[in-house]
Image 1 (spheres, helix red, strand yellow):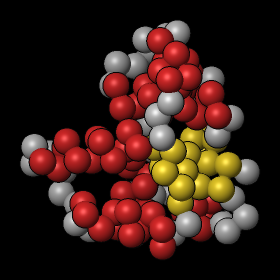
Image 2 (tube, one colour):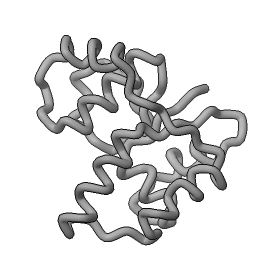
Image 3 (tube, rainbow, N blue to C red):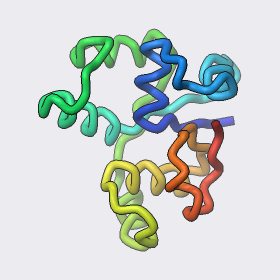
Image 4 (tube, helix red, strand yellow):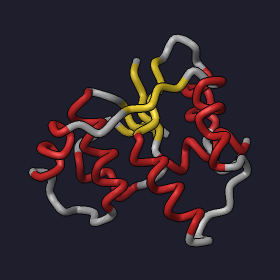
Length: 127
């Protein structure tokens, strides 16, 4: 299985947060699964942490080290992702969430997220 972690799932996993469900933790820790983090998540983290809206357990500069250590792959945003995004209905307006949803759908990835606003998008949500 290939999974894409939503930003909060990625941060909660790194921080060992009890907010992360046991199922999500088990999925992320399973070495048989390919695990992806969208570059959009790093963009979101950078913006929110620089604005003081997000406090990180790990310095931003060390996030790439954590990605490598945990065998995650960084998923770039392609033109095709934005093309898919342009046709996505507006059930949700958060631009970071919308591109992550688009990437999951376009690339056939299950999305690890607690965000119930993703439900109308017919994406394979795991939590």
